[in-house]
Length: 259
Image 1 (cartoon, rainbow, N blue to C red):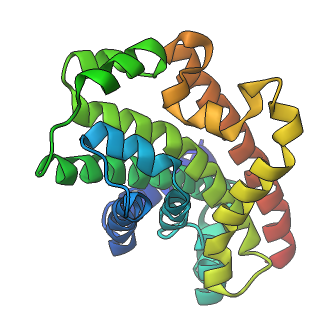
Image 2 (tube, rainbow, N blue to C red; image 1 turned 45 degrees about the vertical axis):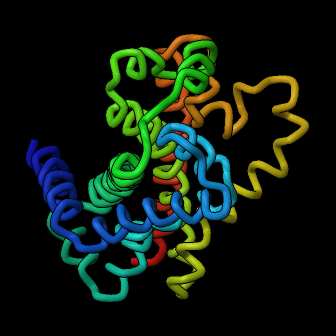
């Protein structure tokens, strides 16, 4: 029971830090800037069109870097300043790693979702949210189309951001694991982009016949996998959590050798 309480204490403390760290808010700004950068030179006429185009552009890859910015280097940072030893003494390495993995994942989801929302709000200052054509396209095949029908555009953006954020959470966990081997912070923060590109390139043949394993199809809600929002969301969540747990496990093994 004591260890369980300590585990919860780890998690609550880490989650609290997410919302007071300046890096979290810098990450949100970074995601917003990445989306604007992705549409530069090809600005669309509505907020929704700009967002969909922005997440499809190459510049959007930078968003994954900013999602890892606040907690993606936590293991190496706390190994360097010695805080990890104090934490492990208080509650054990296993609770420490689980708490950090959960915080890395959730902070990435928050940063991505908030960044997408801010992007949409800023765009709405200069253009309409949607037009008839984009509404028809989303109603035919896009996810969370009911939010568009109810004119809940910000919530629609946040929902899309949450789904992309699940992928960002797994990629940030990969960066955290890489930080146990790589000392250069910039290289560590580039790991999410490298992993995204590598998975996309090497899974082409695997996913061309079965989109259930395609990063774009799973985490980009415009495709509404299974034709059902709930199934689409749960499948994305399940894959991202399985990946995160696997990375959490190997991070624990590596840290056990380091401490």
